[in-house]
Amino acid sequence: MITIDNYFNKVNTLDFSSFPDALKKGHEFVTKATANGSSWVSYHSSEAIKKTVDIYLSKLNEFVSSNTKAEKKQTKKEKQRQEHHEIIQETMRRQGITPKEKAAPKAKDKQPLPQPQMVERIPEELRFIRRFVNLNDKTKTKEDILRFINSLQKAIVEKRIRKTSTYAEQIRYIQGKLIEVYNSMKGKIHLELKPDTLEKMKVLVKEEKVMPSVNFIKAYINMNGKPGMKKKADGLLKRITRMVDKKLIPANDPYMNELISITKNLESFLDDPTQKALSIERNKLNGLEGILGCACNQLNGIDEKPAIMNSMDFANLQFETIGLKGKWLELIGDPSANFTAMVFGKPKMGKSYLCIDFAGYLARNHGKVLYVAKEEGLDMTLQKKLNDKDVAHPNLYVASVLPENLALYDFIFLDSVNKLGLTPEDLSRLKAFNPSKSFIFIFQTTKMGAFRGANTFQHDVDVVIEVPERGKAVQMGRFNQGGEIDIFSKYSP
Image 1 (tube, rainbow, N blue to C red):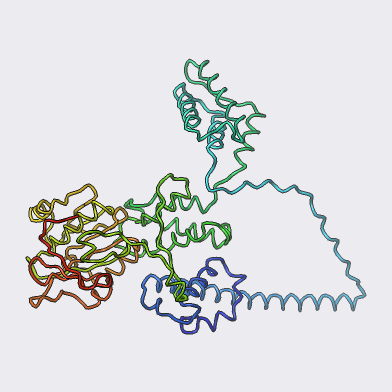
Image 2 (cartoon, rainbow, N blue to C red):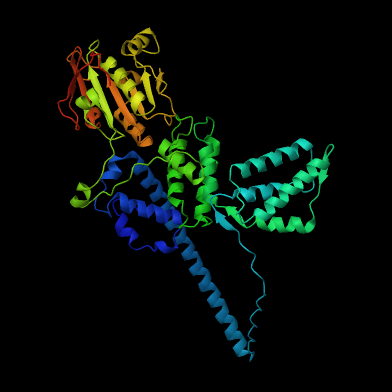
């Protein structure tokens, strides 16, 4: 059996060239995650990596075991066939019979059928040609034909269809025929295209076909944020896996990395009974929509860096920061766009005022913010703090519970972690599922002023802010050690 303890010794004896692409990708993932076997730290420290590797090892062992049994069975059958053949040959030799050789079967001259070109998106012209072909042998009203004409005219006006198009001649023909039919109609009409016209246009429609990987991406996006998608997600995961295993989606498919990421998120969604809706990170969603031809703003994802880098290369890396200004730069410094922070202090010292003020600043300047006020709830106390600091903004949302789908938000405040009943593992899982988002965790304290919870909380965040006395905030994190501000100051950039 192959385990993490003997993995690289065992796989050296395997020929991965004959393995399914999914297992090849799994091997590449293990090699990368462990720096070619030099360290399994990421496996033991990351629940997401451990889960991925364990699933891969299970499938690898299952495949190796089934192949070994099949090889043994095949070898036994071949041996039996050989023995049987030798007995027949010996019998014929004794009887003086010379076996006749079978003539090789004649190859049939068959012309291969033309294969469609696989594309990310069917051109607009072909969409209208297909729609025109589908009118054949159908009964349509005058309104139906008018809608078709209006859609075509709009595409032409918006220059989604141009005069220089490869299919300009067909589009002009369709436009002319539709107008001719519309002008002659009085009511419903049964449409029949000329056989030669129908055949020629059918050939055009079959010239291009959407890549299976792109269809899977589209189905995946359509599930985002919708409740009741567990069954569909399970079906989509099985279809993707089956297509990849059967090599109907080749290993060199340009969107193989996206499919691997999709399957991981689908598996996490299916394995978590508390997650009611599939959530796709906004930066990943924008990237996937871009593949489908969405004219949306493309956000850069978080680049994965290798486990080992040359110091010269690392020194030249450019890290993207949020761009904090004013008192927030003075207190925190300028962290990366996916930072984590913890805030703690005794009751009535101002930690909630501080966090609400910060939430308002982020909403005004840096993106959408969710403030989960579990400790106070959506009551007059929270309303007073919002009004006192004048932080209400269209980009700032408040909630009394932590929603399952955080895809809409860039910054999430949890007030408080203790009231929400979250463990260090829960917070790590939140970050793993939302790697591009920033989290600000607010903690209750003991009578001595220490935050309630395991020390793991403090070690896992980038920024630590303490409110040791009324109205004073001190930062002890890694970006601006020792930064201080007055919480109740009216100055708010």
